[in-house]
Length: 111
Image 1: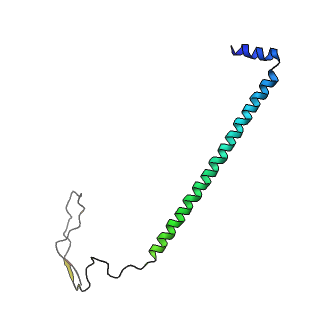
Image 2: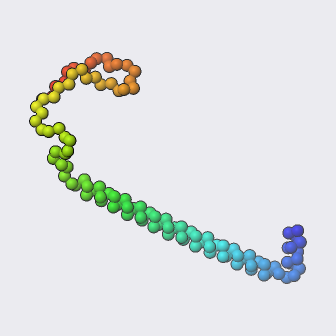
């Protein structure tokens, strides 16, 4: 069937017209593809620029927040005036550990 179409085109002298039509169609497709590539690159540029801008703003905000002094005595803190602190029978063991420690820790006293 396709061979018959080719023969009909050749016999009618439409080869040049058909070749030109296919070339024009290919050229339009190529131009559309190039336009698509340009659009995608432009969108990627804007996306990257926006991400970098927001990252810089976020870091600037963190820098500004880090420069604020911490409150001297935040709410709920233990008041000053503790003179001594003592711990007894304290062991250091992970809750998922299978074995108990080999020795108990000695009594610790701060102050």
